[in-house]
Image (tube, rainbow, N blue to C red; front, side, top):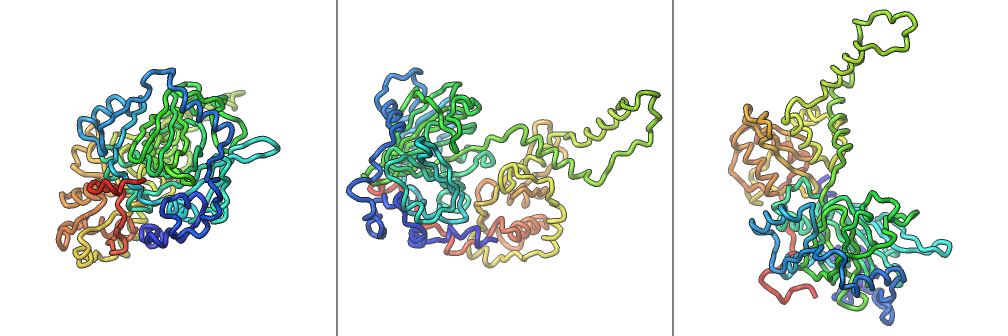
Length: 513
């Protein structure tokens, strides 16, 4: 329900801090004021001991100034987010899915929306997807292990200070408004359907998740403390090269990582990495006993197999009660009962062709649902959209125009994906002059100017300002009523207002220390 989904966004700073008190959280500069367990970190132990294998890589990253590939990572010293038009065009032309880019001070005076205490507290909650990756000794051997949250407080309180680890919390944008604002405010040139989520990684001195590579694009935003990054463009390090990774580990770690380039990221710096670029980050907190926090904006990389399967599932659901019939069958020739004859093949082909898209509009309807499903690519085949909307239509919650006017706008649920499609390359949408609107894997066809305007605004802006009462078009009333009934949009209350900015352009004194 709405209250459960939005609960984290309503928490005050005090209530979030009260969720968990753990050693990784106690690192924040204000921790001593409210963290009763800080005395457990004694006499500068404070994560300064380093694991031997990590020391080797750290040394290579810091001392090896001669790189094997010159200028692997280009550096932009005077760029801020969101990118200006000219910079955005240059980025997509030269860097997107091609090569890394480091943008220094891309978010001036950046302040992380949540401190380390608050982030670690979220890892103790059921609503957040969290993981803990660390090295443990098993039978005299060291092994990377992966533990999935939510975590009891005592697990985080007793994290070892002499081994590398990293605490990761995913999907922060769907529950924390300020984290969602990082996407909407700083990445407006990127199609929202392609963005997966905002993830936070907390790590102590020289902590991290080891050298690895991924199949997706990512922007790494340094949020708290510094982080030393080493990168390499080497086909041997690609994610599908199983022989290059340490076997029998819960976490995929490269065996022998040699950096092509390395650099230290400070708060507000952003590193873009395209798919398959190997990378290795080491936390470098500003204070002894502190933690480093990196926020990552990750992009989806759906498998072709997944997309084809999803479309096939959707189409096959239309024929679930229809069985094979062959009234044209003839007796098999003597001694040839094992043959599948050509008429059967032709009939099977006719059946399969029914599932083929007849135009790009057919693909558009499927793709909008697929891309906005609760989790990207979640099966939409078994969902009876028509029956669902009919049920909503028979139990419509009236639009509260007075409350909408008082609040000033309707708020989009950050945990729901929205999108629209207004054209396709084969012009198969030109004749009907409609707009396809999608939310949470459901589709609507908007035909009126008012309905289209509402769809555009919700998909692009996230808020729908009060536009007068009542709405003129029936399709607009039905759309908003259904979105309200599904809790895809809601009328915000005072508790929903986020009281913590993630950056302050006017006060440089507030810059994260």
